Amino acid sequence: MNDKPSEKVTLQELEEHQVAAYLSRHPDFFRRHPYLLLDLELHGESSGLPNLALQQQRLLREHNTELKKQFAKMVKTAKDNEKVFHVFSTCQRALWQVNSLEKINQVVKHHLLNVPSICACELLEFELRFTAFVANRLGRRGYYLGRLSKEEQALFWPQTDAQSVALYLLGDSEKPTAILALASRDADHFSPENDNLFMNEFLQSLLLRVDELSLK
Image (cartoon, rainbow, N blue to C red; front, side, top):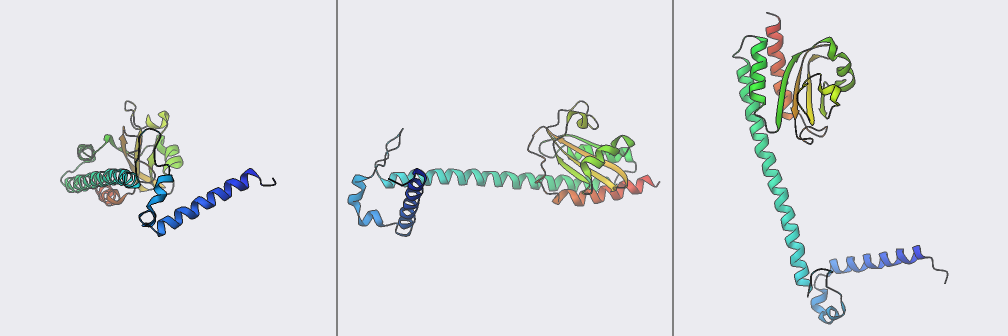
């Protein structure tokens, strides 16, 4: 009479947990006690499951389907990374074949627009209009990946509907040289969780080339 509902629920959950733990340690339990299957409810609401073997087969199929999806995603990511690596490598070599900042911009746009999901690319010389944006978004890291407001997007792509962006500051944060701006229509393409494995080396080569031509 004094048992509280919460205490009964806790006891029930504990007992179910103990049963589940025991069965996991003794997977042959129902083979040794097959008569118990006659008393168990093994039918779903929408489809019959006449025995544990069919139930297990269904779970295995679902697990296999999920594994296939994960594997397909990993393969796609690997192929995309291979293509990105090839694009950056080709672009780096091309940078040393041109002799003006205008040509560098053309080379960068030509190659990086071949990266999957990138819909816009700009290499912009740093101007005072970027000062507040750099302080708010790029900060100490010198880069930003994610989404922008419409007003911020207008600084780089007045006519492009960018769902996610990648922005990289070239040069010292106190005296920037340029900003490399990439845009995607995929909201998940650029996110703070992305790494800059391929981008960092490319940015170093790009900055060296930009600085060299700026001194001429």
